Length: 311
Image (tube, rainbow, N blue to C red):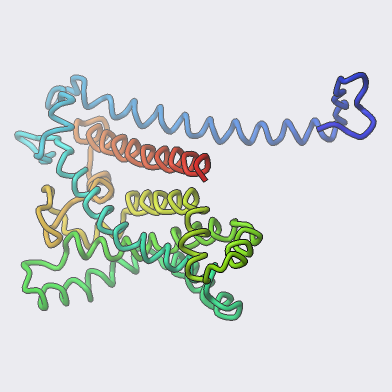
């Protein structure tokens, strides 16, 4: 950025930075590099420990990539251990997709109401309540799901167990909705008021303005909000550990028990001998979870850029 009077003969002269400005710039550069360095170190540690599963670990031999990614069997106990992650990954995706199917319409609808429909007084009361919902500890939600919802679901629907995909998806949706609603409202509020006024001036009703002008103009932010909410649900641990059921299988219905990746890591890491095949297998599961989360974040980035270009 140039200061007034620093343009001469078509050449922009960049002013010299003062020592204070140089210090501030260096400080923020160091902060940025520290954040990148932390992420890089975490990735190196995670993938280096995960790689130990695919080399000879001494207690059970190496595990092939095809066995790890495509086998349904997760039995990390002797005498014949098996480290297949497919059923665990399928369980994670199942509860995440169920939760986002509930949370996306609820979160976006709530965002539209807060941004476009609610009165100022209603917004002042409702928005803090939505944000407070995100502050409820996940262990409390898991306790409610395990003690109250699971027996109710088991008795009413005559199920073998109430700890299943549907129960877990409900509480993950509760946790993802505030994220989607908050980010979605920010995206809707960013639409210029002049665009809305122009729509009203052309004779559009408030409802038509919302659905044909405001929502299409903010699709970039709304899609990002949904995918980040999906990533929030995918990475949750305590709720899925308490209410998903703990069965390492590919679910065939909403009422099957599953054992997602995060619950497996939380349940087994404390009982694993350091350096064993089981230890490295859990880090490999962590690497799979990391890659899934990274994929969702990259998807949010590219979708957001796509909608911005087309809006």
